[in-house]
Length: 472
Ligand SMILES: [Zn+2]
Image (cartoon, rainbow, N blue to C red; front, side, top):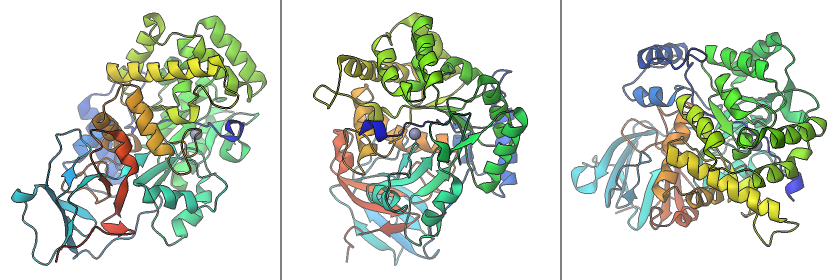
């Protein structure tokens, strides 16, 4: 089963055009760039865009904006415990007022005036959160193209990023006429031959080709660029510069180029915990792994477990400078742990698979404790989750790494929005944000498994499926 699972990767960091190579941009310079980008996109820089500045890129757009409700429609959701996605203390017995697609008021129910004529929904006993953001979703499960996006939407994922499928492959999702998660796309990943996934790859052989491909992808709707593991360092650098000029971030799946070196070349995000393997291993072990992968793409599948089983994620000589680099360059990490999960009792599992995965969990825990921004990428189909539950499995594994459930929810919402460059509109329950909401039964701050108990989903101010019961 695993042999069939893809493991492309790209990461994410919401990105402004950081002054890579000359150290970080000043906040003022970053703000100017954000404002310039926003005006290019024809949008106003609102006060809330400051959040986006902190996280990097902002004003980036999905290819399929959802249908809007009647702008005059007002509704309210009352009685739920609000978890706002920003890590603030939850608000019991909350009220959220929505007009058209926007949240217009949020707070304890006793303090919020419900507009006359608003439809009022009773959500007592539920927790209400921002819609979930899946930063690493592959729509290639062999289903009809709208099937899996619709399924994960029903489970609370209102925004996704696909880091490799050609943009036109999303036409059925975009044009299908049914509610779909907001789809942020990268287009085909930048790679060299022999491609592990030819359908998803564009071969980049020169700086000119990198520039041209970035321009083409962005023109077609890409809101990020993903680089794949055969792209050499110098072309990663050119790609990052070209993408930042156009206001989009670059995220990467790495096997051959060490992560610290690739980050210095300008990456905004790293997809997959395994992308850090060669930077953490001894030089000898890393070179052995690289040699095998250069000869045969398939060698990475088993080889990465042997590599990770043999390294020490707490070895400060290697882990510390790497983590410092990630933090200094404000790179976002989308670990996609669930796709790599191996446990005792799994079919064909060996001791090095189990130890390798254990070390991946430890490294992600280290990153978190050190302050690396983590986001949640499901990878769509994973060994230890049923169909459509990969995202929730990733949430659970992040708790196993040492994040609190509340921190995981922040990663799944506002952090994910910053990584995708849409925190100006999405990722938190605040006045001015779009009403993408998920309601679960129980308290996910006490037990992250409650995130599987989704009862209602709102997308852009409209209910997907059943609404909570209306108060008379
Ligand atoms: Zn992938």
